[in-house]
Length: 358
Image (tube, rainbow, N blue to C red):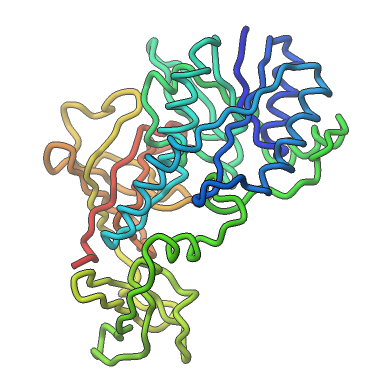
């Protein structure tokens, strides 16, 4: 099979390449390069590209660095900045997968191949002639929540060579095959931002706008923030308040106020109802006729936990998740990712609406 393999310089995509080579596929390796927001190159990418080049030489494979710089900043980061400016919490990684890795890349390069392969911890399943996105065998590393907005044509063209492996086995393969990145640390942070500090990035584009931090129960002013866009619902660190822990529980965008509540177990930071809009089903709507309290599992953030809940349709594209357990930090703008009750299939996602934004 002729396969376009997206590699990052990390161990996961390297082992994915190794497994595909072992299976006898015809591979062409690609690294998607995105420069910094000032238009300059990202020096941290040079090390990644060098590692990718080594992997290509190791297996005698063609390798290309392709640029989607303008497309990334015009789409993914524009979405992120618009979302933050509205007082919501974006997820650039999810939109990067949808728009860049499996959007523009597929349109320009990937479509020339039988499949596109990545090092994501995910799987695919064919059921009744349709392809479904499946969770990875390693719940801690599962990355289906980052794939929850891709389209069915995109999913149908994807393959995940390491989705059936735990991370420990991936590392073991890298060590036994003497891959140069066997002990390289996993990447952290937002897709393609590299070593850029997220708050520095937001400050560069949105500036600062000081405003009060208010204790929601008493109305007492505790301090000042530098702009509501630096804070998200459920956040604890970075508030600069003593006598904590303090958690962000609400934001008033119009008045530039951040509300906090004190204590690890404060009820203000928990909820059981999550309102979703803009629902997106990857393969098809699994409950086209009746979606009134169906059993599901869900995630509202990247986590190894698939929380039990019931899902109900309220209107066109509008749903409510009723969680069986209290959920911490329900952040409007993030995605509620929907799974079957066994957490085996990822059906899609909806955008969490701004119930705690005024």
